[in-house]
Length: 297
Image (cartoon, rainbow, N blue to C red; front, side):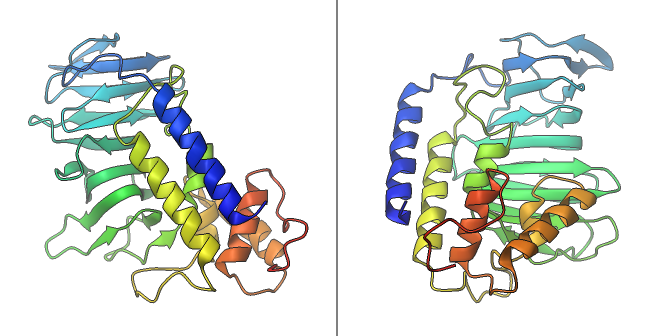
C-alpha cells in the first residue's frame, strides 16, 4: 500500500476513534477516573484503597501494584499510571513527583506546563509525554506531541527540549543529556498499554488523544516524503538510532536484541527513513524484513 493511502487510512481511523471516545468518567480536578487491579493512594501516611470518582488532594501519593493501573485528573493534566508505579501529586496540582514506574502525562492545554520531577530530573510537558523511571538505573522521557523540556536539577544542569517523536534516556552517572533519539510514534501508540484506547476500560478518553493522532499523522507524512535524512540539528538523530529507537521502554538486554535484529534487517544498506519505515512496518508484526514490491528498499 502506498504511503499516501496508509496515511489516509490512519487519519480516517483517528476520526472514528475521536468520535467514539466518551468523556472521562469524572471531570472534577483531582478525581480518580478509572482504576484496575491493586491501586492505592496515600494520605497523611495512611494507605487507602482507590475508588472511581474519589477525590485526591494535592500531596497525595498514588501506588499501583503488579496488576494495577489508574487514570487520575491531576488538575492541569490527565495522568495515567502503569503497574508498579509510585507517584505523588504536587500541592498546586500542576505537577507530580515520580518515585518509580511509568506514566503518561497529557496536558489539558498546551499553553500551560505540567511538571514531573524525580530526585535528579525535571520534565515539563506542554502536550503529552510518556515517562519511565527506574531509580538508580534510568529515566526515559518521550515527547508524544507538543513539546517537553527535560533538565537535570543540579546547579547549571543540562537541558533539552524534545519535539514529537523524540526521546532521551538518562542514566545516573551522566552529567549531560545525550542527543535525543527519534522513535516511531505509530509503533509506540500501537504497543504502549498507557496510550491504547482500552486503557483500564474500553474507549477511555484522555485530553491529548486527538493531538496524539495528529502527531502520528505528521510523522508518517514526514517519513513518507523524506529523501534520506531527518534533519541537521545537532540535538537530533535520524531514525537509524537503533537500540534507543527499538527499545523504547525496555531494559538494556531487550534493547540490544532488538537493535541486532534491526541491523540484520538493514543488511548493510543505508538507514534511510524509507527503509526505517519498512522495518518498523514489519517490526510491528514481528517480522524484520522489507515489504514485498518496495523498490526503495
